[in-house]
Length: 568
Image (tube, rainbow, N blue to C red; front, side, top):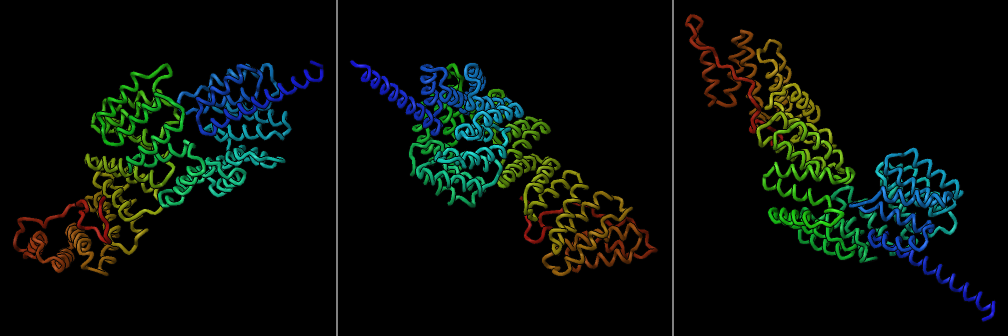
């Protein structure tokens, strides 16, 4: 064989070897796109084994180690990057990867220094480096989303930039900043480069889903679009499984099956998901048994931490607070703090409250409210806790949680204000109740009920009537209620009874008789008032054996409400 031919064959071998490696790297990246991290890790491990200095493969292997929600290996990825950097200290991509690790370790400034060094080495012209920096700041909980936007926009401006992943990461950065419009524009740009890029359609749907149920038709359209573009894109199935989990078990189960069919085989994950479906179907004892089986049969990596939460939920539903607490405690030990959601905190808080640990339980409820991203979710959570205290006749605590709801809800109703004030009143916190009823009157000035409740609260504060604190409130009640004495009969009678008592206290018998007459005009059958009037009108020469009855600053009754207000 002549030298020309042998050289040609050597060139061809190198060419096709490089092509094969490139395709294999892309295969691993495709698995990353589908969030099939175990499969991706296997591909990258083979590439790194063949060439430990293949910095692209090393970077992506580190990402495959870091990104799994369960069993992520940040320490392992850090060791891999550090080892490879020893022989490739000027690799901008690996420096970006190390910055990602440092962000996950909470070392924001160290990470920023790494990123800037990587940009400097690559002269700000390497799309993969800029994309890696942007993604790191989006993915890490304490990442700088503004910085991510800056670097990703820089990447989009590079010549011949045709990677939809860059635009999708830019959309994620805007979404992290809660800027829906520019996020959607970025996702649409990704679709412009790759029409079947399901991730972008899915992400647009997520923008609308976080805006609440009113947008359901819109975000479901984008989810259906993502599935149509790429039926193998598992994240959309997982999202729909979770979406229907609490309201349509059949649909939830169907999407769970599709998710598991399109993701990596993982016995621990499969066991966890199927246990959660038993729970969703109300099969609490069965879900406990299945969950305990999952825990006992888990391999070296251990069970999914979520399995402990599912078993805890089941015990909570069965009223076994002690076992619920035990499994929740284990869950919080096993699960990464950033993975704990509002439902876990809420249920744990309620468990502690049932065990009599109200103050500690309240801390976890507050955590749940802070984590919930929607007003609807926050309100439902607070109301649920408040109603629980109300059912236990812990009215002061119930009023406190209803009061927290007022600070969350943008448009408070009469019912919202009533629930907070009324429960605080029943719980003996008259000062706070008064402040809430004053808000009621300011918000609904034509409704006498707010003034009436303020009067009741003031009367409870000034029980001796020495200060006359309730007078202006009952006077205002009478003024407003008199416009419709039939509708507002209860508030008028209650206000007149207060002034009857106040007049007796002031020794103004004529005024007291006048108020008694006003009451009887509205309710001729009021026996108490008839008796009081009889006592008041007895001749002065006849010793009165009994003083007129003094109605106490009683709790406002349900029948006293006006304007359609109902206690809920």
